[in-house]
Length: 130
Image: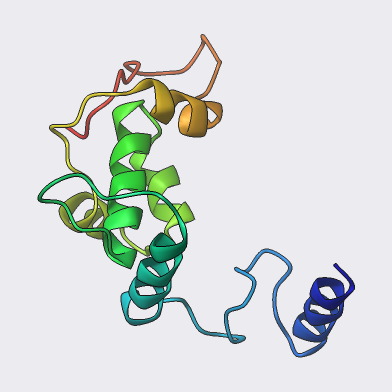
């Protein structure tokens, strides 16, 4: 734990943002070329397998998360912001599959991003990008 705290202090001292992903060089993002090999290595340590016909890659994990969040009704602008996309079109075109229905796991992970307000001006989204 001391090592992690020391790393974090150095990271912040070098200009890293407190809200930026840890273990990413300052000013850079983790792309699929970095995350995919890391993910495959991690999966060798865990007793998990990807669903048949759907390999796990760095981008596929992001895509499935965006799809799950969208399915439970998280606004696309919120999904795009968490993915650090400048445009919701990028998120909608390349990451969200509108055919996927909400799951219990998606509600657990992303339900907190749904507004509880009843005076919301406009239709309530029940999921899906349309």
